[in-house]
Image 1 (cartoon, rainbow, N blue to C red):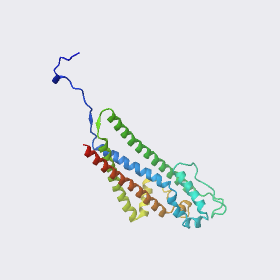
Image 2: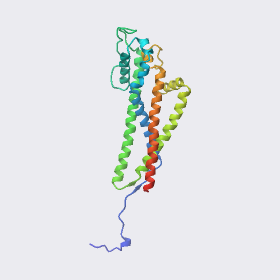
Image 3: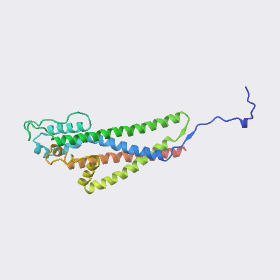
Image 4: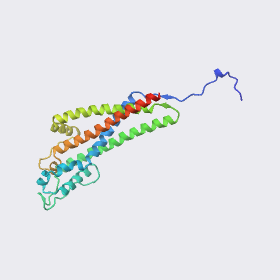
Length: 251
């Protein structure tokens, strides 16, 4: 059936709606990406046993406990697995040839502190899952919007998010690095004041946890976290610049 309306007056079919994300979206995604990377790196480095071996086999821990290198590493793996929620029990009995034969390896204060550590790592894991899940949900929503006919510039949005992640993370990393290099003991104390609501982390010098995990070991672990996180942030910056450059060429 032919229309009686002139061609100029006929209603036109609506085209795809152009979705223009605000500048707040890339910034929010960038901060989430920065956080997700940091939390994931912290858990990965914590569970990386080779990072601890230099201290375990240096001789000081063995002399203080009369435990062999293999026994110290087994005790360390026990602490790491308990912290990361991989096992339910921490305590064990010191072997007959040790400095404290037949006694519990950890004091009640050490056990209570490790409960706090376990809860902190659980919170880190949950926060990482939420951050990655949010990023994935936003990415999926953008793809669905594009497939349903909306014009949305996903490339530029995520490129800007990568640059935001790098800029915010590298700024924070530089500040933390300066403070840690200036006085690591002060830096490490402030970390505990911030994330623990009690003083159970202030353990006696002869505690097994202190013998196995001395302050200079934590300085090494913090350095590894900073190096890995910084590398990922630089990769985000380079990726963001590359994607943004390709998007400009296409447009």
